[in-house]
Length: 123
Image 1 (cartoon, rainbow, N blue to C red):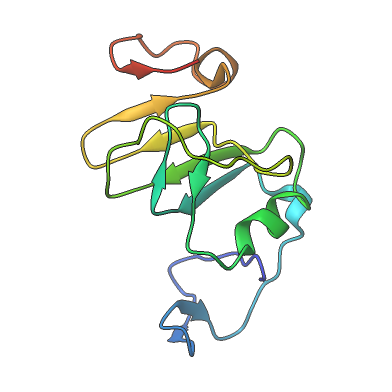
Image 2: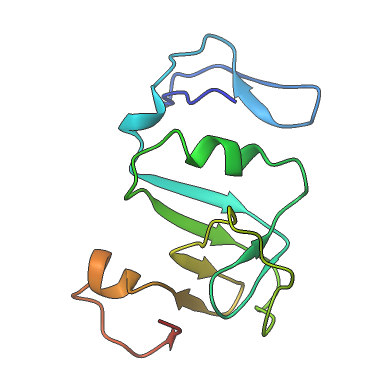
């Protein structure tokens, strides 16, 4: 998986997986990335996630900064608990669904200390 810089002039094509990607890639090393949006099927109330089963994000995130902000995007509300949990499973910092935002692992204090605490907080 490559990390590419995009702007309004970037020409895009659809790859074999149906994912838009730039034609001329301006590659950015993973250690420059501070935030990653992770599409997923569902997450639980502790921030564990179930993705789409290919492991792309698991392998990629370990190449990034240790303090990268991991934001999971799901069409579904979280479930109570995902089991089994493996020792290498990564926890998202924030989970966003169609109706709610969930903060995990003290992510509100770490990244968003000025946001009022009027939503679902599961630290």
